[in-house]
Amino acid sequence: RIIIIDTGNKFIGVVVDEVAEVIHLPNNAIEPAPIEVSDGKEYISGIGKHNGRLLLLLDLTMLLSEIV
Image 1: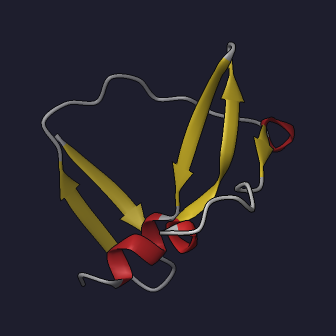
Image 2 (image 1 turned 90 degrees about the vertical axis):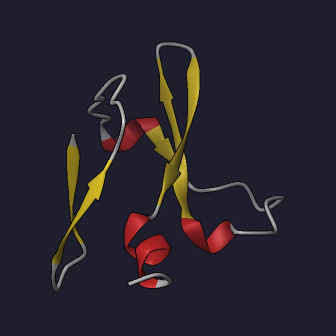
């Protein structure tokens, strides 16, 4: 399985073993990352809420810019 990520200026394919679920979150279900997060906050784009779960949303463009 390959996940395609649009970084704005290029597309990157990431090979993954498994995708458990794909969720589409409305904007009102996403909050900014808490201020208490200190290490690695630049890689977190927000916190999502879905069916009573909290989801950590990663900024893949920022994360991949470190390795590409």
